[in-house]
Image (cartoon, rainbow, N blue to C red):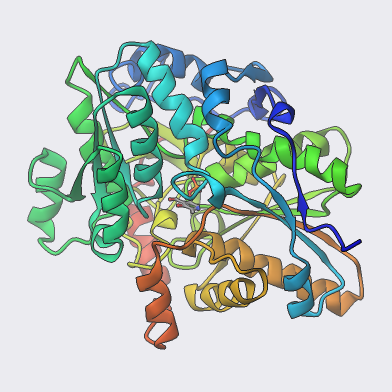
Length: 455
Ligand SMILES: Cc1ncc(COP(=O)(O)O)c(C=O)c1O
């Protein structure tokens, strides 16, 4: 008998509830603040943007939240996702470490984003939403939401960060196939977009700018709601199905991870894999949780724990989070989905309380390790996910040096089949690591340090 590679669950083994870590956090995230009054924002403040059923999840402190049957039925199109033992990658690295990965690239749109797109579209449908707007960075979130909105018959407009719109034209086509309207952000159809273009007509855009545009489009309209693919508590909640499945799969494998790793853009796929294991840690298990970000956008490793706006032109509620400053414009690295100035308040609070670790890497070293992984395992990782792989290699090499059999789990958040222009640039030797001078970080910090401190 050959050694096991895939640990598979049956559809009937799929978790029936999401895990809400807020119930168990020693320090709960501070409340968001109203941008005008500076007072804690209540459910009504979010009502122009989100339906009340999702706002209830956003503020919930209930530990377990039922996954509705219609959402489970759609999840079953690709879930449970496989847990792989990366035996060939282990061999390629010559490490005594055991490396496992949860593969979210099996979803219809190719990443973990579908795990929250489906419930968000479902709850909007229940609430009678007639139209949805959103932003997308790498195009993964836009693809996932286009898929979900199509299922529930809700028209969708996607503001896609311009650099990704240009680097990833096929992502745009996927969204169009599912029926969405896609525009390159900044546009000249919103006040936010026009303001950015007035400052810099060649702006490459950023997630922060695209959020401003999508929010401005939705907020004044009765028929329209806005959705976010990361950062918010309810988004992180929906992603916990990843870690909950992984826990069951580790039981099948008769193993348990020493370290759990995920890349961090706004924090949702990392939370998805990490939070259920954090529950084990709260109960006394020894397990480390590691978030990995790009050196070009080092929110957790070099940002400030402070209130800041979620968007670039300062219109959203103020969020308590690690931030580089809302007008920080990261270099045009290929991991478009990791170019966000802030981090989920839940992940930020966990980092502040030293319950998780964070590391930052340059894109060249991430691509190098992604290619080693692809040659060993056959799967081409999304550039975002390659950051997690970079840290897996660091842990695996450390295990080799120490002669220890460390058990590593990482989240392979998506495949890179639509990121070929990035891989082409890497393979041709033309990829660059863009230095981030401290003066740049200081400049954007200066602009937010007058905002409220997190108590
Ligand atoms: C494949 C993939 N992984 C990770 C991310 C980062 O987002 P988050 O930190 O919310 O998981 C993205 C964002 O677009 C993505 O497309």
